[in-house]
Every structure is written in C-alpha cells, then in structure tokens.
Image (cartoon, rainbow, N blue to C red; front, side):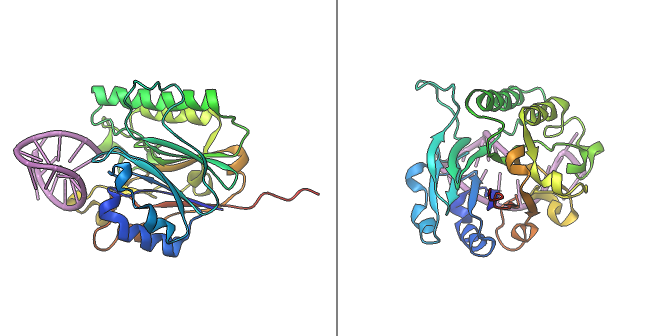
Amino acid sequence: MRIATWNVNSLKARLPRVEEWLGYARPDVLCIQETKLADAAFPSMAFAALGYEAAHCGQGQWNGVAILSRVGLDDVVAGFSDQDEEETVEARLLWATCGGVRVASVYVPNGRSVGSEHYEAKLEWLDRLRRHLVSTCRNDSELVVCGDFNVAPDDRDVWDATKLHGGTHVSPPERAALAALGEWGLVDVFRRLYPDPGLYSWWDYRAGDFHQGRGLRIDLALATEALADRASYALIDRFARKGKGPSDHAPLLCDFDDPAVGH
DNA sequence: ATGGTAGCGCTGCTA
C-alpha cells in the first residue's frame, strides 16, 4: 500500500497539479494539508473521477486537511478526542481508516517565532496530539500520522543548522514534542529508510531557496512499529516542486508491503 | 539585501 502526504498550499490553486500527481504517483491514500477551502468548496467530484473517496475538514481561507483513499475510507473523525462542541478548533486534524490502517492527516501550527503565543500554541497542539494518541489509539495497531509537522526532526533535516538556530522548526522544545510521539511508538518512516542528510520536503518560495537547495524536511509519515516494519520504500517527490505554479512543499510517499499471510 | 514569493481577498495577514 502506498500512503502519501502533501501540503498543497491551497487546493483551489493546486488542483490541476494534484490531479496530475495522483495520475502518475497513484497513491492508495493521500493526506492533504492547507486546502484553504470550506467543506462546501472541496472538489470531491474531481477526486471521485480519479477513483478516490475523500474526506475533508476545512474552514476556508486557512488550514484545512483532507484524506483521499482508493482502498476504503471509514470511521472519519475530525479534530481531537478532548474537544467539546463549544470549542472552535482550527481545521488541522482528520482521521480515517483506509485499507485496514488508521490514518491521520495533520497540519501542525507554524509557531511563527520562538517564544510567541503562537509558538506556545504549537507546542500545546503537539502535546494534545500525543494525548489523543495515548487515550484513543493503540501503539501496537497499524497507524500512521502523516502531514506537515512544521518541525525538522534533527539537523540532517535542515540546509544550515547554524543559520536556522534560534528560529522555529528546529528549537529543542519543538523537537522534544516530536520525540515524545516517537516515545509513544511512532517511527519516522522516511528517516528509517534513508539516513542521509540534505533530503528536504519544503523550500521557501522566496530568494530561489528551492534552486539553491535551502530546504527543510518537515513533512513526515510517523507510523507505529507494526506498520513501519513493512515500509519498503519512501520518496520525497522533488519533481512535484518544480515547474509552473508548484506548492512550496513536495509530496512524500511511502510504500508498505502487504502483511505476511499466516498459514 | 533584516531582502525575497505565493495565496487569500482586497488590506494586510499568513506562511
């Protein structure tokens, strides 16, 4: 099974490129972030035409997460387990079960600047995700949390650790919040397969960062051991970051072998 | 060069 994740930076602006990518990458599941659409504007029919069911959690203008699947889409749940009906929560978390795997599409808050209230909210969001996993999921089940984490797990994941020091995405508290998900039982699938530095998934649009190789690896697929054990291949598709009108993120895809058949 | 681009939506915010 091929599971992918892509921050598309507006699905309205990116739909032709997403359709094109689905046509050649053919993931079984695609987690999308930053649709920037209201639910009513989500292009379900375009995806249905390509063989995908879809679930969307949107708010329009900002955020918005979706899951596309051609291997079933069941038990769709938006948001955190501890949300009450009164609480207005940003559209950053969506769950579904696809082909026997519990899948989450997440868009972690950016944090803006270290020490700001937005940064504190980012740390709290990551801890709330951890608490959600602890209270509602089993770490021995087949589960994968995919998305834009807005955190580069370690210095291999950034183009220049010295220049980025003191900023968001690399601060020790952010990395600790990510590591706490690992302690619960999630494995960085891409990193397990490829230990090399310099493999990025996001490049700022400005100053020619993509062409200068100034990127970060912040788009991750974090799988439980039961699923990560079957990971056979992963790719950050840099081709999808090239050409006219790309997202600032490249898609990440991960291939999982079918479970061994008992006898 | 404390710069730069893209998207949303219409002025400035978010990333």
